[in-house]
Length: 402
Image (cartoon, rainbow, N blue to C red; front, side):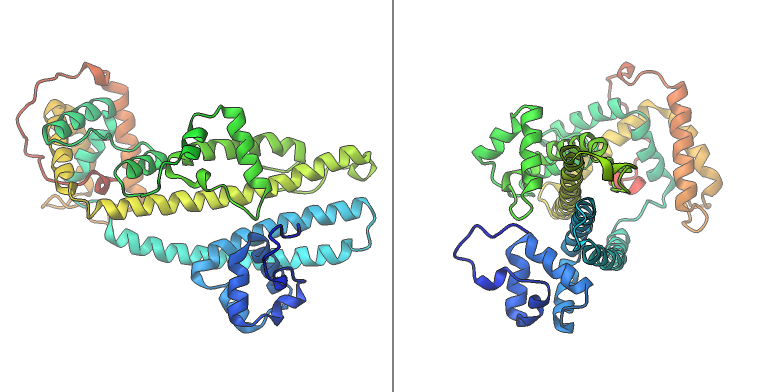
């Protein structure tokens, strides 16, 4: 690990694995929060059985599990590259490092199971609040909007303008959701000059900024974490990983794998070019995990805050108006969707979840959208006149139709 650059930091922050256990609980909690390398050191110490039970519990607290998984992921890759370097140089410490690597891998698998269980629990809670619609008409309207996305976007913009709302098309991906959430003040992050500088930066230069951020594991560039930069950060990370994988001789974009045959016979400059690329790849993977977690947190925050936003009812009404008009313009397509849903509907028009399972729903949706795509006219050829409401004017939020 690199030496701390801040001379005002307490000396106990630079510790050996066995020394971490000498910290009292308060000092240990402070140690974990100070720098990423300290979390990595604590994770390796815990994997080796050096921590006290109370420290283990603090390290594995639910609020820290995702960061702990990041630390173990980085530690695994860093230790693997260190073991490879030591083996190449016939360093006697190679066997000890290989043992630590095995311990860290075991710990990472366990933490992965813990984080997966925690995430499933969170998702079950959220899904209980937002389940797919069991109403045939509501489902048909939602699928119709996805069959005619261009025309629906036009109708939605018209309805939003009539309601006095700023036009906002439905998000195509999570980055749209995050950027719109920031524009609506649901993510109150200031747009600083540094954020603006990064937003207009060239692709190659920006990729260099992201690479520098990954190399410096102990410090984060706050501007990269801004909501408006998540799309760019994602692209740059994927490009960096894609460019580094062949240089690092990695087995895939998510695993180092074994070194190539004949590595031990390579000249040192060639060998260290591969090893350095492998170490950078590990750092980039850690940043990718951090980025994925951040965009998920942003998306959840936007979704939650939209539910209590002052314009929520107006936006739902505009959405329903746009759906009403699309149904009126496309009676034949609507009838096709309803016919596809009819075998799964009860007499009162309900789609029973036990009968219309998620797998059946997904299959039916794919088939009906493919059917309509094969026969429909281009979206832009739709009539502009507003037609009367139809019997399918059931108010709904579009997300419930998925």
